[in-house]
Amino acid sequence: MSGLSGNGWVTCEQGHRHWGLYGAAGLLAFAPDPADPAGCLVLMQHRAAWSHQGGTWGLPGGAMDSEETPAEAALREADEECMLDPALVLARDMYTDEHGGWRYHTVLAQAAQALPVRADAYETTDARWLPLAHVDQLELHPGFAATWPAVRAVLLRLTGGTSSRLPASRPAAVPAGPVAARHAAVTAAGQHGRMGSGPSIPR
Image (cartoon, rainbow, N blue to C red; front, side, top):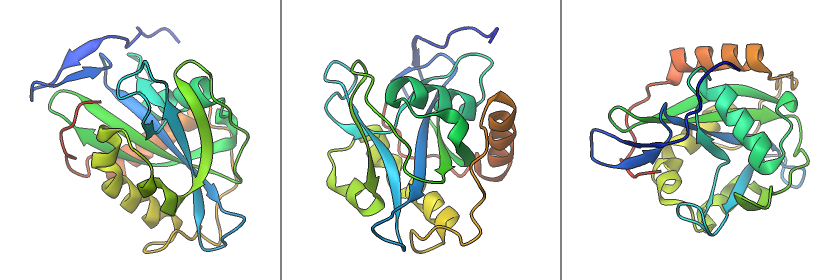
């Protein structure tokens, strides 16, 4: 990729400092729950102690590079931090948290099953698939906790509306490389990329 690295701090219009010169993106991967046909699993990351809000749970994610789409950045970060194979998930939707001159994009991506993951032992101390209902029982990163109700609503719409049931005709997992990811991100942004501003908590 010929773009510039997005590593660096930015101060938004609300006076908060954020990591990511061009914004940031995280991946909410979801898959069927074998133990609960009406439920789904989500991939959660336990943040390393040294990181911002270390010791809390959240989504794999980080700074976007200058020419990356949110989906490309989120998939790359999930690969780096949780060893999730980006070719086996399909970006389905996106929620954008607007902070005034800086945005955090949560990309929702579907997997056919709970794929193998492991912590990178640097930014991540644990990576695991958990039932959706268990997320609220974790000590969450404050930024993720603030937007989780809105992100969960998007997830529930994708997986069956008011429940966490996966659609009966769920699309097969397809390669989510640059072209597929870019298409998914553009489609999602056109539909839901500006669903409103979430609570302004620095990430």
